[in-house]
Image (cartoon, rainbow, N blue to C red; front, side):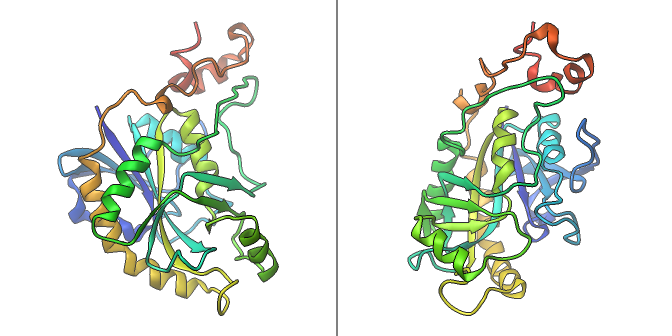
Length: 281
């Protein structure tokens, strides 16, 4: 059964998008998620929405409890996550109000818990292709039917919450990165550890600082608001095209757990049972 998780700003959540709405507060082994989960259906498909920064935008990118957010999605049976992300453009050809479905990410964050596997258990998962190719294809094809959309590209994930300096922005361009944001990591890593297909629907709000006047949060919010209707339309049409396929993302932990089963602490085994039980005998 397909159940779609949507992570995004509070502006993306629109009660009219969902039927049979239920609000659910969860506590996970990693603490509380950013907000309550909104559970319902969208075009007949089970869907779960989470406001990434919490209602009222209370949490900065560094302070987000990414592990609780993704683990909560897993607890609710989510099979695919679409992460809606406002980003800056590092290329003139990628314009504000365009949509990008990136296929790579470069992680410059340093202060975020980025794995479920710690405290006596180790797992090494593959991240060569950090986003689900099948889900990427659906999102790009759906977006390009009505909007300027770009397939592929590298998302540079910075720590934030400050925006780039001009020097940093210039270096990122020279290194060939395409878009810049603050939340792709560790969302993508954790979703892969949780064996959930994960893709980003990135909406361009600005040209960072290399192109024109320095970007401001006011500009980002204003442009993101203009993109909200486009994103909602893409999500409504895309959810019905997502199939319950046997995707490699759904087997990411197979052969990845390095710790001997008898060496895993009992509490860790209990806390991570949802992830590791299929692989630990």
